[in-house]
Length: 285
Image 1 (tube, rainbow, N blue to C red):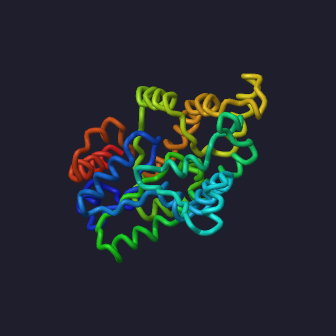
Image 2: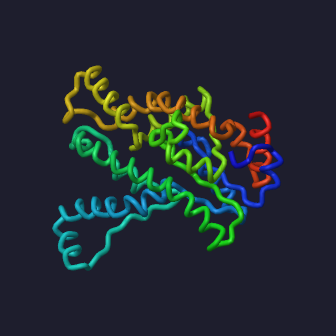
Image 3: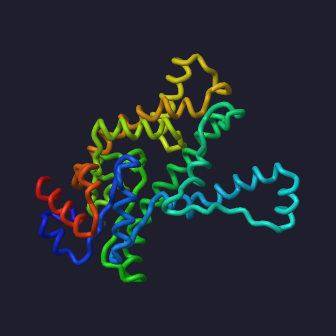
């Protein structure tokens, strides 16, 4: 770890952290708070995925749908209109909409093979965006003059690294650059995340073997065939299982860094609060 003690952390001229954990537990909230303090550069991995690595795919998908409407097709073909995604740190809907959900086309689902192809695109994009962290940390100082750097990783980071491999290229690079900080949720947090997801199920990335197993188990349990699967029903059924699948992977990643609880993160109100929390996490490690 680049900070071995609380003193190393509090006295560091350049503080660098990678926040990871389940989506919805405060990574982006803390990152926004640090950015607004004026001394932290906020690098959003999901934003980088949706702009640099999958932006063209997202825009082309929107254009393909527009081409099915004669009025819009004529305007596109004559370069009279422009279609692009308006993705932001706080609105990643263009990325999740492109990923989609598998199942019945009548209910907005994708054929499973196409869905898996988009999952693979996301995997490659996420790995590339994580490898870009080092460049953006340097850019933050050299170009913009920010002394501190926070990497706001996606919830699926644990799916694209092998936390049990000390030589994993992504994890090794991140550990050499910054302090890995796991925002850990408990069963109550998990229940709340599941409740939110049930209310508004959204697309997400799954590790390939887990996804294939979940798909086959769902078909066997429900007796459905691919073209009849309700996309929302499938992702609802899968979500809680995905959280259980990710938890031990996050815990293994945390061996390379420190752990804070979601409740502790909820109480952060300032940059000073964050600095103090990380110092405590280093002390109890």
